[in-house]
Length: 487
Image 1 (cartoon, one colour):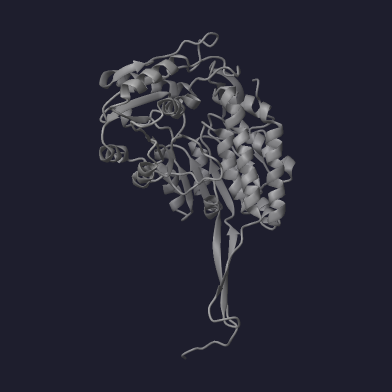
Image 2 (cartoon, one colour):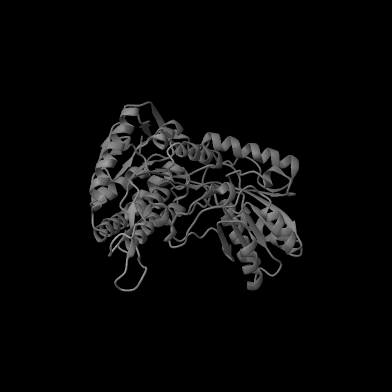
């Protein structure tokens, strides 16, 4: 139990041991337990909501400039502790330390800092009707109340920050439920916020599976729900929130296209395709898993891709030289290997396709980075695998590739590589996706709104757009004269 926290939950500014059923948190590289966490009981859920309501009553009255100072101090704390937080995230997720040092707590700190800067700018507007002395109206931007954040297991502390920072900047309180697979780093965020001066109860962490999440979603004291997860989970959360007519933000899955035109820089395109499929062992919702390559450059693209894929280093995730870690769990391991077998029957296997043997980690959830050459109808080109599986597809016409790229129920992300910027902007307008990259992939700066269309979700995280999803506008009409009544 090398990462056991003082308690399972963090409620009202302190750790709570937890009285519910206990589950082990495993280090995916070795399939060995690193901590034991209790699921929240009904009493503990009520305790968290009561604490959040008290915290909200204090935090909503806190001047925006002071909210900003608290968030900025929390960002500084995450940066101060980045090494320890990154090692914890590596133990909990299996992601290589090479990644977690730059992409997890560090990006969470950026998010806290960005929304700290937003907090004091949340103003309304004045609306005049008939000159300087006539009636007028104004708007107030107000918090929603107690918000629920439900996290995913691929970026635990980053997702917690993506939800907590805008919620807190707007004056809300939050209850955050991490994935039961990765329960640890959200507790450290709660510690950091408390150290930074956040009132007790304004940010709480409760652990548990979908049953705990469902109980929180349906509780009438929860004012808003934000989920990062699978599309099927998103549908359930939306249905649960609908009973109370609660606003929801859903950041869900995808099967995103990455389009390589014949004028692209192939070295850059290959690098982006690898980042879009192998980074975090392919466990990223926005990954460009359908790589459309123009027929004129496909041969050269594949040659470069196979050479660079063969050089990838799988190994000890705590070694900064390691580039690829294990999958998150036994269930994900079996799912991805199942798709590898399906792919072998319906597509051409160009690389990988099986379990990976990694010295020193015989029991971990390791799979080979895998490349298929397939038709659009193949299941590996249609369904979200959520593993290091890149599927190549061939095209020769812009109209054709746009139609094929959009022929999916998902719409989270898309990307393209071309030197023709007129074509790039034309494609950007036509591709059905909430986030799109030109000559890059999977760059998600906090300043830029992120979210999907179609079955990939609704609402936006990050950027100033997130403020709209964690606040509400109130219109106030001010009459300066008498009432002109017809009766």
